[in-house]
Length: 328
Image (cartoon, rainbow, N blue to C red; front, side, top):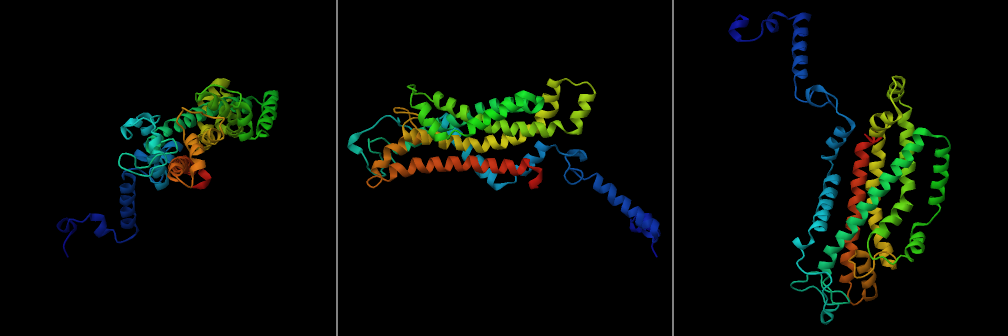
């Protein structure tokens, strides 16, 4: 029989026909697993466990819903910043001689009731919708997170006052409140609309932030940091906020699409943006009387609005699934 050196096999693999040889092989395989890139399952480089955010990103970039919605949103942001890159005309240039005409060279979406190019107005309308949605979401998230986080951390009378105040705001119908408050505003900019959304939108975020802070405040690592003499500001900023911000991000992402739809609704009713501003809600309102003669003037801005709102809602759902450990 040839020896181990002639066959090139390890000596233990030939001689160790008993338990010792099997243990040597198992130990060798274990060492191979430990040296494998990425470490154990669920770990990061060199076997280090991934954090919540890195684990969420690992799931998001493999989620086709997230990829599709993110591509749509990136395209919307691009045309919001540089609408002239895909629409060379002016959204305010109209020709009554072409009113209600259908698709033709140079105007793929046709013309509306005033003879304006529907394609150009649809492209430029994305700027208003995205600007209103992003600014309103940032304002709501910051104001609601600060008030709700402080109330949840300190509790007491301030927490009770905030809870009763949010109850009052929840009792106000959003559309009816917009009709009442914005009907007296004469400004033709987006800021009154954004201010109204922040005024009525912060209670929802504040309640979510309050609940997340109360839950994080009871964790052992927060109690240990408090026992070691950490100040309230350090507890909030270093230990509680990073672990309580995930639900706020999820709700804010979904709410962004809702604010875009709300701006279009208020503009459609005549209390949001007003001409000569370019908005999908304004175009939908102007095209409604001509829906039989020129349905294209209504369908294109309506379709753009629906796709935009759906993209942000899908993005929020994907982020929620990635950040919620209970859904794994």
